[in-house]
Amino acid sequence: MKYELLAPAGDVQKAMFAIDYGADAVFLGAKAYSLRSSASNFFFKDIKQTVDYAHERNRKVYVAVNVVCHNPLVKGFAKFIASLEETGVDGLIVADPFIIDYTKKHHPNLDLHLSTQQSVTNSKSALFWKSNGLSRVVLAREVTIDELSLLMPKVKDQVEIEYFIHGAVCIAFSGRCMMSNNWSLRDANVGGCAQSCRWRYELKDEKLKKYSDSFTMSPKDMALIDEIKQLMELGVASFKVEGRMKSINYVATVIRSYRHAMDYYLNNGFNPDQQDEKVILDQVKQDLKSAENRPTNKGFAHNQPGIDAMLYHEEERKIAQTFAFIVDEIQDDGYIKVTCKNNFKKAQEYIIYGPNFKIDQVKITSLLNKNKEVVEVANDPMATYYLKFDQHYDLIKNSIGHIKKTLEL
Image 1 (tube, one colour):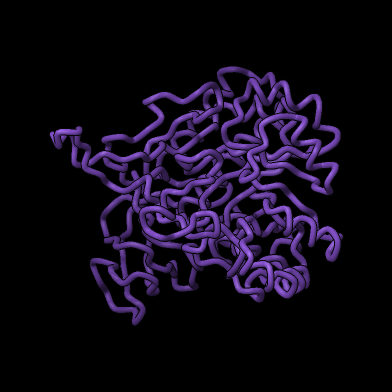
Image 2: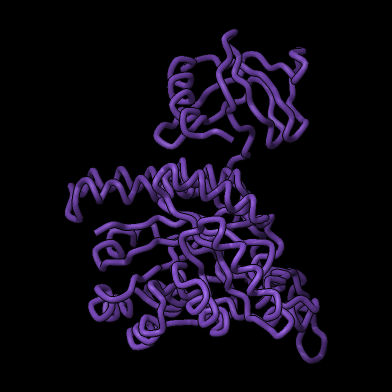
């Protein structure tokens, strides 16, 4: 069986990184009809560029067209979907019956995947949507693994199942939230979510006695790295990572980590040496933790989540490591050309990583700005800098050279 690791793509560059770090497919949003209007999202030319890049590497691109389609959106849909099909995308993630019906009738070559917004929680519902022309069902995030084990034998030879494994979780059932509508006049179901559940609130009783000034209704993020083997054994077709609004570092780290875990089981089977398996998973979990920006939890995977699945009073955790720069190329003079992402300076230790390598405890011995002038600190985001490391130059050069053969931004 082929398993798909599905990555979020907030823009073209993130899509490329996701693909090169191990994603079998990426999902993205166009400038309309998507539930992430705050993300960069893609013009049709950007989608075409991403599709070309993916198809050259035998990967796939899906577009989220999963809004609740109110009447004003119906009028422009025909033109939108025709333009979208011309980009060559492999499929759409859909929820609204109008969008499903229209696309089936007028664009039958587009593969349709049912969004989690439809909250499918049982085999009968999954097969209903299969009978209505959908090739894949993204299960509700509230489906436990026990429920999944009952569902899979009844559907896996008839319709693909996609399961959410990592990323932010909505306080509402499968993301169908009205908090933004009521509190900020932004409709979450047409892409306007204001993240109201993550705001800070004052908590008082009926007598206005103040209990807290930092109350939130924010769920912890989901992380199911420990459950990957079980999910693969059950026959889940696609493993979804959420995060179209996350950084390149987040996408690359998370996809790289799950790729390593999934490949380990593909290469060693589901009954590998336990000690060897523990070493692999411990390293992967350490890498995942470095990209966290809030604590993680198992969500609904094992049972109804309790109070420990929420961030009622905690401050959101800061990312454990700072995303300092992107390595662009190794130059003939021995300097490494990089793009600055956050402030960094000489003498500190850095981790350099790519899809298949990771080098710890590397120090910068020389740092130049874009004019090749010596500086002590890189503090101009997105600007070019040049640097040298104290060790591992050849390994970095060879590794980056291999990446650059495929990663052409």
